[in-house]
Length: 201
Ligand SMILES: CC(C)(COP(=O)(O)OP(=O)(O)OC[C@H]1O[C@@H](n2cnc3c(N)ncnc32)[C@H](O)[C@@H]1OP(=O)(O)O)[C@@H](O)C(=O)NCCC(=O)NCCS
Image (tube, rainbow, N blue to C red; front, side, top):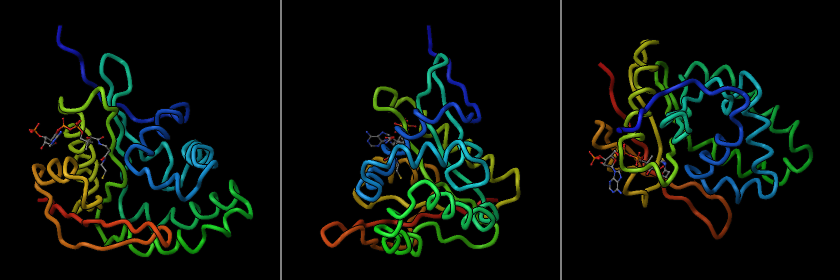
């Protein structure tokens, strides 16, 4: 029998899958938040009105089991929730925030640059055993549907230049690379990103 794919909005109880999938999509977060990584992600995920909240996550399931997730939101959500996300991070990390503050500022200056009416695909990941059967594409189409519903004009995302699988998926879905840039995580670790855009009709 063919497996049944379905999509659903995330709930606050989904924090474990969210943080695992988030780290598959952005492993460099561990370098930033170290032992606090999962605690940070879970705390932000259960809280409303921040850029890592369950409110902005869709899951794909196969036969009722979570297979992948997408975190996406509009430029307006970004504008409204950016500061609260910073405040929540400070609340969770306390003075440890001082250690990473400069790196966070550097990353924020490069990642997620949005113009009015843009819609941002922040993170996409599929568990390895469910890859290659269309889940990534399904989640991207869901985010695109969310964007269309609110009248967004462009989809925006960033991916590491070395991530050829993701680049191939995004190109197939109509995205084009518009810019390449670097983000410095530490003196030994520089991330090379591509910014990709898809205009919406
Ligand atoms: C990128 C990722 C989400 C793709 O998910 P997926 O469910 O395997 O993708 P799909 O099955 O929907 O494949 C869609 C397209 O992606 C590309 N693709 C998928 N797997 C590929 C592979 N192994 N090699 C090359 N291209 C591949 C193809 O263009 C494919 O289209 P096709 O099947 O018509 O050829 C998944 O590999 C993943 O979670 N990777 C780790 C996290 C990550 O890199 N996230 C993106 C960060 S920006």
